[in-house]
Amino acid sequence: MQGSIKPYILRALIEANLESVRANVSATCIAKIELSLDLDDAFSFKNALKLLYVKSEFSTIHHEEDGVIILFLQDVKIHQAKTLLYSIKREIESSTNTVIESIGMTLLDKEDTYNSLLKRLDEHFVMSKFSSKKEIFYGTKDFSFYKSNHDKDVLRSIFKKHPLVKIHNLYKGIPITDKSKIITFESGRLIITADESKCPFMKVKSSPICSMI
Image (cartoon, rainbow, N blue to C red; front, side, top):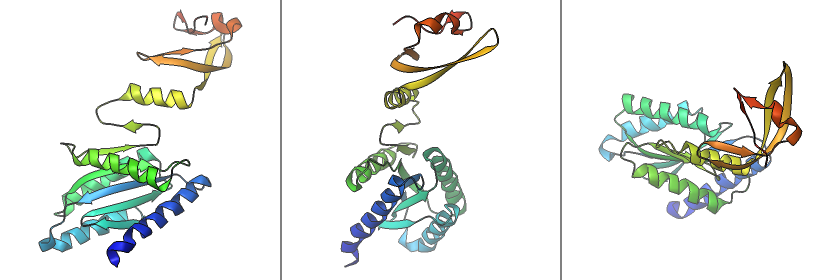
């Protein structure tokens, strides 16, 4: 009976957290963590789990299978969650005989469903599992962050979802602020729209900040 009820417990936890996110109550991250499990040294696993529980400020933990747990981090943004998990990983591995084999993590999104969230979480978890350096793989519904430095890909995704920006400049000591829309982002450069009448006054160093579109 225990094996058959676990998926329903996890579903209840995920759906409850999704409702909280949709109500703008808090940002929530979910992590799938695999810890090495030696049944001949079960106390080491117990101590590692206790440390994880305490250091995550008693966050909800769901046991999925031997050595694999699901952790819910509420009121924590994704970069904060990554820093926290790296810190916990180092402390567990330095003070117990337990090794954290892999961590996949994602941020809950208002548009997520139970299935879409689990699919994304599992994708990050599998990538971490096959990572030679046991990195944390993590991301959101719109983009992923990797240690391999995909900065431009991340920025492109951000600009696509949030294409409106503010331009701040000074003209003879007078601040100029204007709204603009990002047209494209290629080779590290943004192409934006701008008010034609303000273009001559918008400069970066000695070069105009915009061109006529």
